[in-house]
Image 1 (spheres, helix red, strand yellow):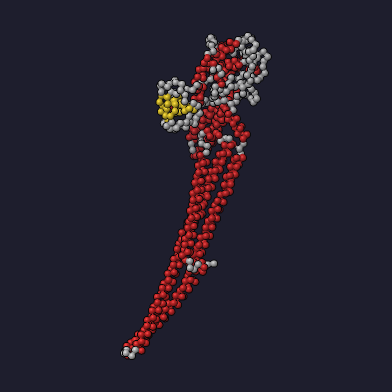
Image 2 (cartoon, rainbow, N blue to C red; image 1 turned 45 degrees about the horizontal axis):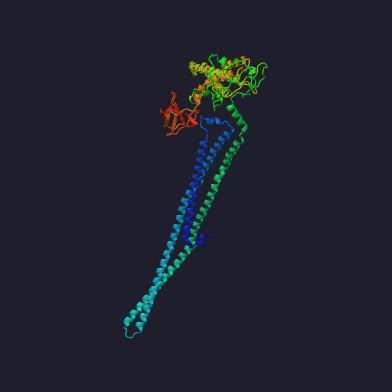
Amino acid sequence: MSWGTELWDQFDNLEKHTQWGIDILEKYIKFVKERTEIELSYAKQLRNLSKKYQPKKNSKEEEEYRYTSCKAFLSTLNEMNDYAGQHEVISENMTAQIMVDLARYVQELKQERKSNFHDGRKAQQHIETCWKQLEASKRRFERDCKEADRAQQYFEKMDADINVTKADVEKARQQAQLRHQMAEDSKADYSSILQKFNQEQHEYYHTHIPNIFQKIQEMEERRILRLGESMKMYAEVDRQVIPIIGKCLDGIVKAAESIDQKNDSQLVIEAFKSGFEPPGDIDFEDYSQPMQRAVSDHSLSSSRGDGKPEPKFGGRSKGKLWPFIKKNKPPPPPPASASPSALPNGPQSPKQPKEPLSHRFNEFMISKPKIHCFRSLKRGLSLKLGATPEDFSNLPPEQRRKKLQQKVDELNKEMQKEVDQRDAITKMKDVYLRNPQMGDPASLDHKLAEVSHNIEKLRLEAQKFEAWLAEVEGRLPARGDQARRQSGLYDGQSAPAVNNCAQDRESSPDGSYTEEQSQESEVKVLAADFDDEFDDEEPLPAIGTCKALYTFEGQNEGTISVAEGETLYVIEEDKGDGWTRIRRSEDEEGYVPTSYVEVYLDKNAKGAKTYI
């Protein structure tokens, strides 16, 4: 099967077919190029996606990634990053192993095709030239033969005519002979050219064209084979990264299998456990039997010792009798007592009945001087950056213990580094003493003194935090021991206040009251005193508006996020600390930096009860 013998007369069609083959090859190159661009774009999008969900440094998200589920998600993001890298490898290999080679091969193929078809056209032109020569000699021979016949006929006519002179007959005879000779010469020339043409034509159709077409056929077959090899390489490039992609997927599966829901639940306990015991049962107070109850030593009048007349129960204070039922404002817990009678669920003395509800209210009042203004406390904790107490006394006991333990560990690590540095300097100084040519030992004295000073400073700091840690660990109740009642967060609690409250409670011989009116009057005093404490928690009226000059991301507790150009309501001016309190909706308010907003105060609206 050869194009030279089977397609000897299809020169033009072969030229078109080979050009089509090159176009197919270029089309495949373009396909691979677009595939590489897709792989690069996909890898870039995967990397951006992985980067987008990576935890930000020094943010709250880093704390979330101690849970096994979040760790598994982080591992998934890392594996996806590696997964994206494999798609980049696919793009690089396809470019280097397929696109570059095929592009170079196409250029070589075009040159070879051009050369082969140039030889074919040259052979065609030569055989056409030979054909034209043959046609010209043939026409000349035909013309000479006809002229020779006419000359012969004219001679015979002149020879038969008796009226024609002998000279004329001789002239006609010579002319006929000349024409006959010319016809013979044309015949010989035509025969020679015909023989040469037949030889050239035979070589053209049986030698030149088959050779040229055979080269074109081989060129086309190489193109087809090269295209097939490129397709195999295309699949092989993908197959080479499959094991690594499989490892990435196996890593994701392994990360998913490492999720431990029990461990995450335990971490939640460690993160939010306050260390307080849950409150016990409230005692039943029987008012059905009239009886005279002696005023307890824990009454408001005796405990406060102010000697002031008991005010009447006002209507405004009635609604604020129980401050710990206000939303998100739990009161501090009553202090613990070492007396068995003070334990809600502990054994009771036969001579001392359980304390009534009013008694517990009285204990709440005793610890009142330790309660900060809730609003100022929230603002201080949320916005005063760096204002967190050094001993973490603003945290619940368990959380405070964890923070103190963490601080002690950090100080011990820093102190160990300084100790190692001191030992290294000491050894270097000994080397200098033994070999003075290596250095001056006195040059290390200043550095050694500085390191020793740092060690002493860290040691004192560690002792301070260890003392606070011991204090907290001494207060924490043992497991299962309900040592005290607790109604909410206990902020700013100190040891002297606990001891005083416990002694006051133990000194009470009886937890009941003798007169109904006495209890009511004491409750009135409590409600009146607590009015001032919780008035600030009512929604504040809008005193003006403000426009955000810049975008502010409120990431700290107590702050609020605003967008540039947004208009909001001002509910509290800057008090000199650089923060302005604003409101967007009834339940959405917070502080923003004063320099981020432009405030427009409305004097007429100040104090008005207009809520947003």
